[in-house]
Length: 411
Image (tube, rainbow, N blue to C red; front, side):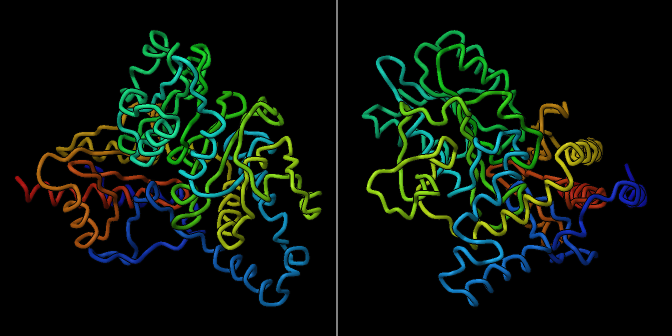
């Protein structure tokens, strides 16, 4: 069994960036801070967020409506302050990227453009363990087009997607998978599945809720038609934070691509001409509908700047080290890992299947008796994510130590 002293030595040699974040206090156990391993569900608050947000609020107090143009970060073009950092994070070009709305809203807006069933090509392929919101969204899209969702939505084990596309791809209109599966933590082969979908004649989109800020992405090079992500998990922008959208440049400015539009869908330079007909730009900004909520955008901007300074390459390398260390600790315990063991096929999350009791009850004991915060999915999955920005080797050790005590009791 690895020792606590060993974990602390590893932290001294490989410290991460914990000082940039507020870590919650422990509600149990013998340590002041929680071992926070739930960043795959909600990331921690950066220390810079409060000050940045107050600056934006002060502009409203001082300037009123004139803050649209005269604030230090003017509200009228505020979303543009996030475009470059968001694009670099997901390996896209700035013109292909925009921060707006929440994740499922963005998926619906994108499916208006990229789910266009015709003839016998109507099916939507998702993974069998897709996050429920994705399942509800694609089923409702099928109904919206007058189709039977039970016949239209094809749920597949990720291992079967490529073979299905080769065999039945002529009936597939859209492939929409999670880049990292929320339940198992498996990282999909985004380039290979994207190629296979296109070879089958389908359009391909990705839900990157558990991938953005977790694993390196090269969306422009890989070539999916679209992608969307949230910003409250690995991107640490707060509960319900605004998400992001990618639309590949081959679709930008194409008049054949249908979209829902609103005031922010038109060219910024002509927005205040108040024209009755939109003139959308040849960028992902054309998918915007409403003017952006400034106080929701501020935390996203603050967080993206952290990623921009540190870089996904360094974060991914530390993630592999931390997750590998936690895996080694868990291998000493009677637990079952459902996440792939190959570091190249997973992100920061390790999912454990428990054999006795309720996953939620186990998570409650970890939190209130040991000060370890994880995430549970019933009936039997506990998810732990040693996020490389702020998690430590000692956090991993604390989880394993707590599990050892609990599992020993259960024997």
